[in-house]
Length: 345
Image (cartoon, rainbow, N blue to C red; front, side, top):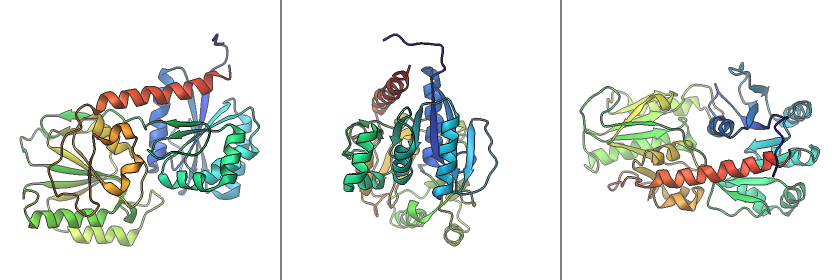
């Protein structure tokens, strides 16, 4: 196929709570844009925010508040710009409305972020008719079939984290470090994870020298912020040196030692960046079994799935070989998007 190079190929991403706010799907979209740039596709962003903030990037158009007013603002912005591919990162209601009102010259890609979104689509004949008639491409990061005609099984693309044989301070300490990444909130089961860790220490299931670190925000910068819950977390860990809340930091600048294990347990979740990043390092990853179906089938064999209430019960094996599979999934993801964008030329 001959491709004209006279027009810049581009894509518009619609996200929620983009940087500096804490939105996992938004951060993944920003990382995806870097990968797309490498294959000749530039990105712009609209961020629909729960908190009113100033943009820290010229590429992000910020809209405070959702609802009908927010969607009208999104629609007007899309009509003004040059991008003819719109990628919506989560939000089935947002997807259906924009699919109905946007002119057909705009191609739509919907990136599923949670299993709840698949269930909404699968349970509604009307939604599926709209998406199929409109020619929406669904990028599915889970292992659950989405009952639409154009369904891609893909994976989020992990950032490159750093690994080292010593921790970031150069210490030779070989005690196991358990890492939890994500906002401090009830859905992420922060309190339950801490209690299980403390119980595991009491029963000597984990060694006395083990530490538990949480990386993620606990200030009012994300939609699920709950002051009383965070106060309960601080009360539970008060005076302890082996459990620390590190806050929202740039993990790509850290080095994770050989003895690091990622723990991922939530009441509900999609396919989080943190799990893929640690799989890419081929380090041990523990995930509660209620979340198994949220991961692409090709990655499941590399993950230590355990009972939701028994996270620290057994030795965890490294994810040897996961990096190659992640590279294959990444290539598939980028190729699908590239085909949609280039088809407009």
